[in-house]
Image (cartoon, rainbow, N blue to C red; front, side, top):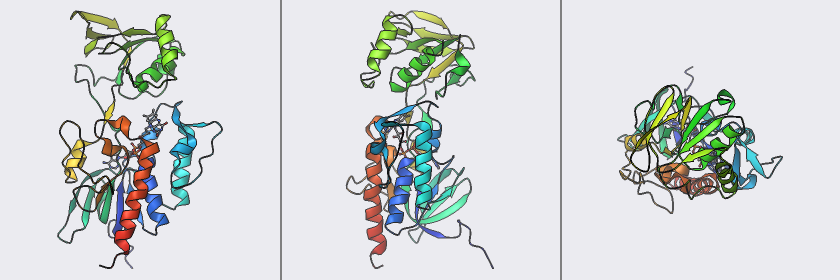
Length: 333
Ligand SMILES: Cc1cc2nc3c(=O)[nH]c(=O)nc-3n(C[C@H](O)[C@H](O)[C@H](O)COP(=O)(O)OP(=O)(O)OC[C@H]3O[C@@H](n4cnc5c(N)ncnc54)[C@H](O)[C@@H]3O)c2cc1C
């Protein structure tokens, strides 16, 4: 007897990405009687796994619930660990199927109109594909010498490696501000470099008084109008407001200037994202892309404006897409 492997079968739906929105899509499909396979290049909710270890979501727990499953937390807002537990349990509850540690490289339609999904663990076949790859894998780069060194990271996790040392944070958005505050509270000498005249105006309102007061007290140093130009083992070089070259002592650098959806993957799935905005011309009513049968779900649809789509609103895409696919699969051929 030949045991059918996952690559032998034709899946009604393959979901690329096992983040909150991908899991929501799988759960909503299951509720409508449609099976799916979630192909995820890391672990379940890999992006959240890579968030700062002690982060707290800004949304209340009920606003990041998916598939109607209550998210019970000790406080009003969930932390990273609670979210990791919750989304995994939702997947388990709906008995979702995963192919983990498996990266999708491309999808293309064959002569029968089926999707061939090419991945690091083989070729899968599906009637529909949902692209739910988020944005957190591809950091925006500064493209300066030294950026790829071991003592530079585009992801902040925890402060303990840096106590009693100099850390430079490049960027003035929420991730940069949260990292600066946490590092400062663990006896790190923090300097923030921002290109503009201040921190980003999109900073969360409850972070603003905290960071502003620490800067005013001189506990955290903020250098504005500063463009980092290179990094070496012990220094960050930047050009100041007057165009002068300046050098900062720095044992470690966090370059936290944002993340981008995977343009190359979108193109390899037959999509044509705009070269500047990275937006794809999808149908806002159904989230179906110009490639028929390929849907876009979650933050990947936001292009470079990743702050526009998050779990709170991305989870709704899953419901609409599942309705559309369930309707299509129930129609007579
Ligand atoms: C620190 C922080 C705090 C946040 N707080 C909130 C909040 O309070 N409320 C809120 O609503 N949002 C919040 N967000 C944003 C939110 O987490 C994201 O918008 C959300 O994770 C998007 O979900 P997603 O499923 O679209 O993408 P993701 O969660 O990024 O999941 C995409 C998945 O796809 C996988 N993947 C990517 N490429 C491939 C590939 N080629 N093959 C296979 N798998 C692939 C990735 O590994 C990943 O697991 C926060 C974000 C950060 C960074």
